[in-house]
View 1 (cartoon, rainbow, N blue to C red):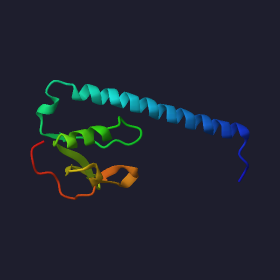
View 2: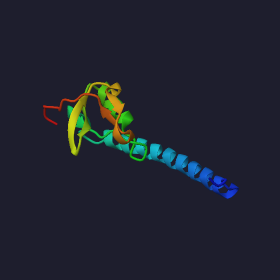
View 3: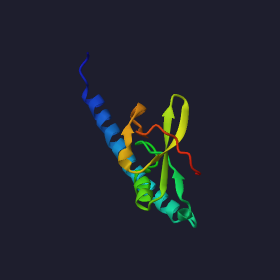
Length: 116
């Protein structure tokens, strides 16, 4: 294994700084998107919401999930089984565990039977 050059080390540090900056910007943009979403006329008229649980490169939805749960809304998130995806209701953010590809998924195995 060859030693890492100062140039490669600096390049890696620059990538890490840029990545952290992008994540910070993404979090800021995510907050604006969620704020606009919940301010839409009629957004809270619904009883159930099917929402993806974000990873670090997507619009951050964790706060929206928690917010809706606190409002006593039915929150459904995707559960994958092989190549199939089904909506599963969660009652708490703690119902999610890190699963394949480091994505949060519900622990429960039963599909949601109600109306979305």
